[in-house]
Amino acid sequence: MKKVALVTGGTSGLGAAISARLTSDGYQVVANYLPALEDQALEWQQASEQDGLPCAVAAADVSDATSCQLMIDMLLEEFKRVDIVVNNAGITRDATLKKMDLEQWQAVINTNLSSLYNVCKPVLESMQNNRFGRIVNISSVNAQRGQFGQTNYSAAKAGVHGFTKALAQEMARHGVTVNTISPGFINTAMVDAIPEAMRTEIIDSIPVGRVGQPEDIARAVRFLVDDNAGYITGSEISVNGGLFMH
Image 1: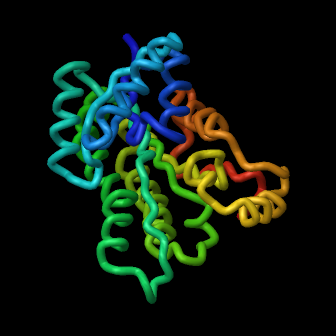
Image 2: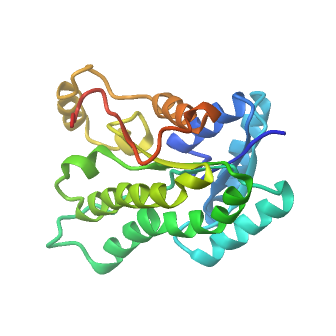
Image 3: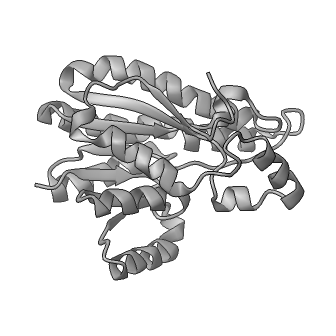
């Protein structure tokens, strides 16, 4: 029986690469998308099927607990289990704290941090009953080192690893691992939006001399969700080309 993997924000950017990698390796992937982006998600699903990577999709707003509960209930009804969760969905609303309004703060905290509660809580009983589970939470290098204009994002992503360490302790005896991946600058639309001069400066500061590719993150996720990775939990893996070492 294929293990079922839910990837939030799984139809674009890093999430799409993670979904593709897990699907190609034989997992039954369910790529979550924001309900308002249904057209784009269905286009992505169709393109994936044409590439030989059939993937299910499921709508939910990860910042809304009720929406996530309904999505998980649907998955448990259809697949009877959720073995893997990759909490990848995230947004930015950059501004210095002096100029940041409450909506910018709350939107990032709710989508990037509260979403972990919203998505993980409904799957824990299933994982516990099956004595198996893999939860991978996507944080950021900017949680580790801070970033000008990103107090909301840095705070939320730092909270991701605090959540990881605490839940890892709670679930370890049930065969469930919980780990964090902290990407550096990855070749996604978010990085492409950075002005060229600034992007060049960033690349010059990366010891390996390039930005990462989404597949770099997907490979790290694949490693952590493997059946044989059961002795790794509460860990944070940095995938940043040496940009930040700790």
